[in-house]
Image (cartoon, rainbow, N blue to C red; front, top):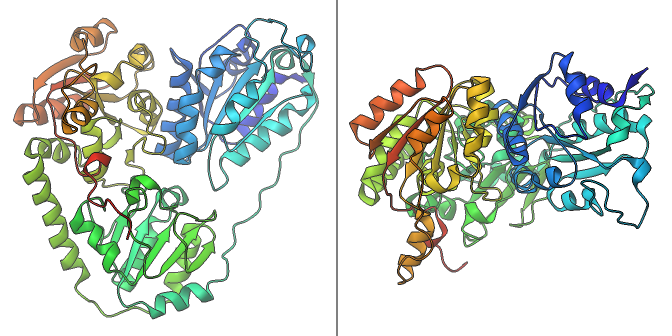
Length: 528
């Protein structure tokens, strides 16, 4: 016999979990004991929100299940914002939180037990794919297995599992792993016919295609159809082909591809408001949607519910190759126009974008992050993590702690967002995580300052008194330096930082104009 904590760790291992992120509390210490003798690496963080962000960052960087272990009541509640981001961005994350002992719970009564909430699971339900609280210790293995499987089954998303703390020390019976069903290719007759009718198709690649590993198949389809490819924030870097546009549809020159196409082929995208300027993009003349879930934001003429990679591969096998129409040359000219637009709009940001091109990046909801998310050239799958799903400020640094387990990662954050989780510099230092933080200090909430000034009002309540970030980082034992702006000195210093071992911080004193992919600058105002 084993106890519940040992069973939980056993199930995680059966799902290939190699690392978990967590914060210990009096209720979940048995899990820490079970992990002590396991092969799973435990990374202890300084805030529960960081645990889930780090699990999310790990999941985005690796495609594997991210696991966060937290304690009861306030510990669980601290996770909600990060869990909501994982849900909105489709990240496979398992949040395991302890609950008060089952022996002290009385249905319908609040008794004031340490860390008690009236319904802890109910807090999570709006921000998870599914959630359960165990009612029987012997069910722990089955429910943990189901939760891990559900989180990693498309459409991916976070799952909550609540475990009464006494179940962790109780002896539990055996469990049987749930078998998985093989993916199948759906019927594609209508999709093939729709593509056959189109003379000027556009391929639209979303985060679902990224998570499905569909990049190579979509690239082959783009080559066969000689079609341009645009990517959403979640799809950045998924497709490597000369037909990929390196700029957002929020730029009129890129948005024109949508308007001119006689067929939009969407892979793994729900055509969300952030990418479509709150659906101000017109309904395409024809829309073929390939997605594991029902797409409702635009009405598809043909909907294929299936795995983006398998469907793309099947279309490549089925469709005939088309004559070249000069799409690669057209896209090259368009990419040059995108770069010229950046230079004309905000030339100070170009050295940042250029310096980041060969790196894996986690960007925050800050002005510099908006530039990276919209205009940074991402050269590898899963090369960009960006919190556009729910838009949680303070995402980047803690998420990078998980992403760094896949290799060196560069964080782009602002002075406001970094302070949300600056205490986890201790985690980065203790674990020796290869994280380079590019902290852009513009003296406050730069986007909100722009919003106020853009509406004709003086800045108010958005300027911040911030610490000496270099001294702050060094106090944690993390090397840090600073530069003024993104000139030659920045590129040289960044190169030095990414060549080092462990974490480091580079503070850049700079103020940037927000890019056109931020909502105050959207060019589509009325849906046509």
